[in-house]
Amino acid sequence: MKKNALKAAVAIGLLGASSWVFASPMATVNLSSFIQDGSIANDAGSGANLTSIKYSLGPAGDGIATWEVNGGTSLAGSTSQTDFLPFGDWFQTANWLVSVAPGGVFSFASLDIDLIVSLAGSNVSSSILDNTGSSLVGAYVALGWSDGSSATCALAQQAWSADQHLTCGAGASVPEPLSSALIALGLGMLGFARRLSR
Image 1 (cartoon, one colour):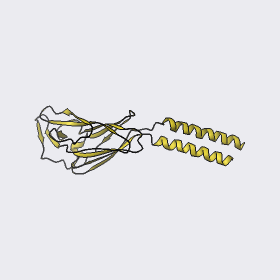
Image 2 (tube, helix red, strand yellow):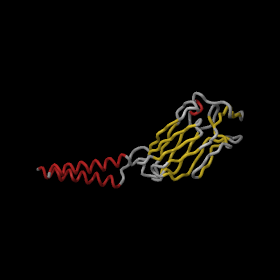
Image 3 (tube, rainbow, N blue to C red):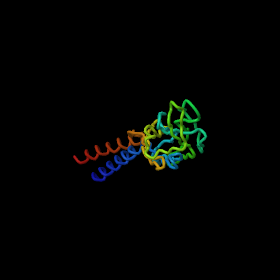
Image 4 (tube, rainbow, N blue to C red):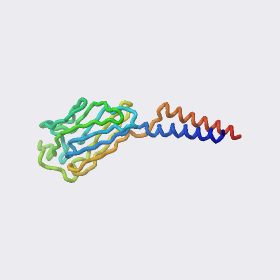
């Protein structure tokens, strides 16, 4: 009986600890077609809906990538464009408000990437391609979940033509109430098993 109580205590404690580990939301970001199309998969173990997506090319400057307004944003959810250049129809950040359940995927397409040749000279080129990634120095994807957690992932500084695959996590795990209860029950069972062994 003592061995069975000890086994039960360990199993219950491990069950509680394993559900604690997966309480932190995670998502996978895949960018393709010169990083103009993408999908964000909310991890099945996230435990919260993905509610906001911000895809930014970072602060505007010479030699930095920018989005052109006339590019589409094949949408699911509502979108907005922010961080406009002081001239023309270019912006730095695309924002989406979404509701993507754990295990679900949000996709977008047809953003139009260009290069800021000279911010002061109001010069943007649609024909120059960045083959080194230097224009992505401040680029990132920021995600928000319904439980209030968030994550930001920097894009790799590589050629626009190369696909990007990023894993974004919300940080430190926080135990859920059920996890805490299972851990407490497991510890209680360990104490009970110890008493039996005396």
